[in-house]
Image (cartoon, rainbow, N blue to C red; front, side, top):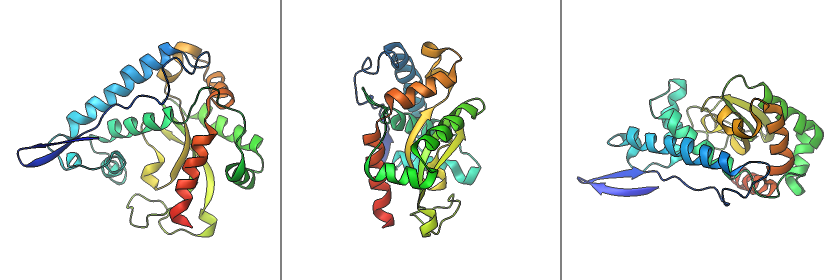
Length: 234
């Protein structure tokens, strides 16, 4: 985020971050054309529109993108900036959920928690794929760590953590909504808006989901996110 001082006030301008790999690096599983269209046009539009919406408002006074998402969610009574803020955050998170040569199976603590909370890695895959496939219309599917670390988050479903809360869940969200608004720690996401896969898979969403899980997921990123999510809860 770039900050500029104008008229004695600090105004924030969010920047479009590139994916952490070249745009052709996910081929043949996700084409360069898809990345150029999805990141270069859709993601860019969310960032550009967000910057226009927050200029001169309290949301543009140096808040982080996460804070703008939570504030503009406004306990479900969405403020105008929410959709663009959330989609900007969601896409940053999505690009970082993938890597060239990804997929396979996680290891270590992440695999142990998946097996504890879902019964097996195969059960998790089935549940995650089902959530992504059955999200009606546009939206996202997520693997989250439900710790509820910040008891003062007004949007949190269950703001006081217990040992039972410290678990992995699969959730799906419509449109731009993401787990930040419930104070869940996101670990993995897949974008099931049609523009995420139509150039490569047309209307075959289940095929896209399978390729994402089998060939693209960066389990290293997911493990690092879990480590970060657990740190304040221990």
